[in-house]
Length: 450
Ligand code: ATP
Image (cartoon, rainbow, N blue to C red; front, top):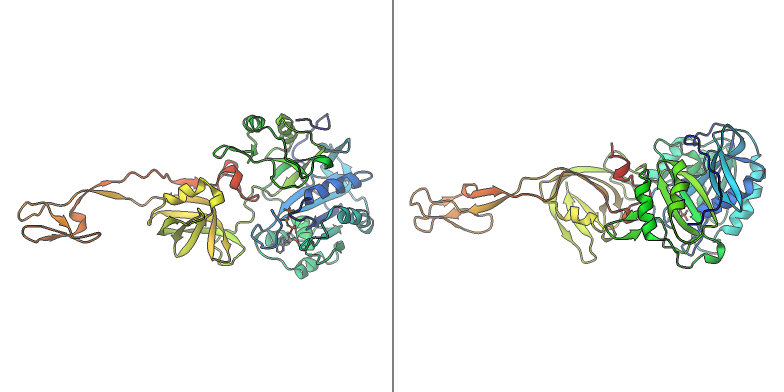
């Protein structure tokens, strides 16, 4: 794959942002018809790096994946700018120019001026004609409190709450309903506990909306050569996962734990030429959206432990539903082979689900499944012998006692001879194949849930 830009230099992960630089956040600019907030981020970078420096990597922050009004992946953008200090890393290539990010920064730029420079870009690249596109842009000289991020990634935040959290921190501009202010401010509020990176490559404008050309074999070999990357190729379903299927400007995105490896991984992929690329620091693959406890509220995610109390059944659309401590748990058809794990469960199995509560019908949408202990199953080998007359007894029906055909003596079910039934399911953690995971779900490859 042709990769614009040449020299690389990567100091250790650059993601620390000291105070006093300017924080920019933007969200809700795109619609399903095309465009993508991350592309707007590259336009911001192009504009701002004319005279300012990026402090740390730009950030792609995923928020609550269960809110009903998201367009796709509920992603918002944040970035810090100022006067860079320290050894920079190359984080992208836009319009023939290398994009560098600095580990430290001094103040530079003035919030109102920066807002005035960026607002026309929001207008140019947002799908403002589309209902439900309600952009918000913030330029802050201090970050909002981290609680705003945690609420926005796990629960529902109102516009009023977002405005209160921004009080006195900087300047804000909204368009139409302005709901984007929630994502824009929450993205600025993120202080990573866990983190990953993603290199996003974009197509030339002439190609937008046309089928993408990305060579699957090269994606598979990139996946092997760069074990620090994840969610590249869905082996079970033979599908390239790094290239989206929407008409947006993104050519592909490679996610991983080592930002310095991502551009090299990208170079391994053969296919059409990219027009620009940029590495983002992200909360993807961290499980940040999952609370520690079971949650009764719809549109939130939590952990649910219990005993399977209803056998799995497959619904007409291919979804699999089973009961856990009185809850309904669903593994949806798009989760593909993950459903086979659910189908192998039997009443009595002890499991833990990481999943989101769906409003209607009320069910837990399983994102990961932990088989903690398997119920012991047994298969009847022979009916018991009557202790009085030595004849073999007959079963009186499913779950009913046995009875001697000659003397009518009754024996209960435990008197039969059984052998243990070997389960094919094993204890351990399970997740959907690469192509069916949520952006925020932590792949098991990155470590087991705590
Ligand atoms: P894409 O992934 O393509 O960028 P999207 O899925 O991010 O699109 P948006 O168009 O940005 O969708 O819409 C999400 C909207 O929801 C934004 O207005 C954002 O501010 C808002 N939002 C995000 N998180 C929350 C939350 N926790 N509570 C309430 N509103 C939220």
